[in-house]
Length: 525
Image 1 (cartoon, helix red, strand yellow):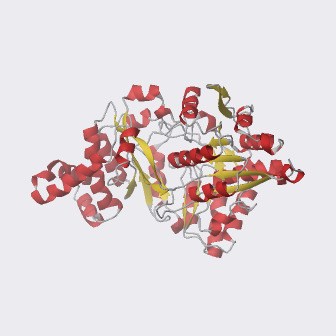
Image 2: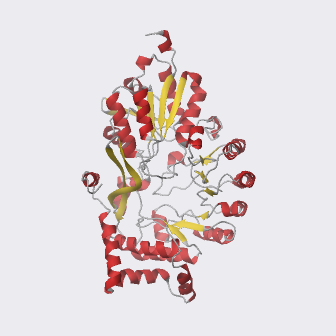
Image 3: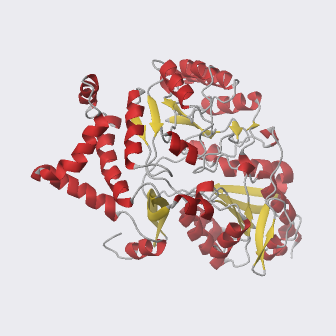
């Protein structure tokens, strides 16, 4: 081996793939941006990083120049796409090391082992926040000769927070870092790691903190390994916001990935700084954020400061006490959230919520009552649908499924499909279709009712009529329910109802293999 080759920087490709076969909003790959900026601070110029969102660009780059390591971010919306790319790369270079990280995996050891066995192209899985564990892997490989940077070498490493299979048996640990000050990770914005994506019009995503103190059973934000609140410094946050806003670029929006924006009193200062940047640059039109479920007084100040730039977003999920108990949301005060909505009215652009369909403990009637209550609180932008089963969440565990009689089916993930190098790649989502308290027939009826509800209220087609009915003391949800129950009696309206019924029924597949067989028929694709 020549000296020049031996001294050549190690090449690492990091991919947070998103389907781009059809036009869609695209976001900067913040997660792999953190990994690249932190790893670069550890290994310096001995490693060259390239980041990807497009699967075609990634595979073209691999064809052009073989990397020493490929890392993927694994989410429910890119699982199949990542698998497609990973297997293509592994087929071309069988001993090229491939690592994965991200929340789309069960967190018990049996679940991790099953994932690795079903995704044989993966050499190592980095659990939870992956900056430190990924940097350790890169650092270990960078100290080896190029010919020794192999999949076998990566599988042989003992890195805390990582798992692998050795001779078919699981090896590793899921220990996470105890850092509560997140500034140890250099900013991928300020270091220029994400510049190419910003130049291409990708939407900026920012974090001011990580972790969630709430343990909702359907979510992975507040699982025990991630429930401790960790923060970036105010100086760091302001520097990032300034870098993005004063770069001369224009953005449709800023997105904050915090689980609970407003949970900290300092978030008022962040809102003030953000508003000042908007007034100065006008480089973005709105701010998308998940509001804190703690409903603290200072959140009114945040709404007043941001004003038309954002909307009040309170994800109730349900307004039934039994359902809230079943999904571990009893420690979230509905009364305080309702009060917050009332106090914010007139400041923000609108008030939005999610009311999910088919939560454990929910009945057909309790769901209607939740919708009615949300309208009574003055919320007229109501989203939320059937519940996706998220690997790693309590709801996805075998015990929880059995306790609540959860029965699921699969459907295609909206907007997440395409043809790449001649192969059809589609994402599937596993979704609740029945529980001990609601039948699939009732779920289908709610699907039809929610379609009427969405058009009339959320999209606003019939809001004047809704206001009139409310003024007369008539329940709007009961009107919709009557339409669903008796619409078939009208021969004209029956055509609409039958079409909705057929569409609502045929999107579901009993298993992944049934969905795959459907897609293999050319007419269906």
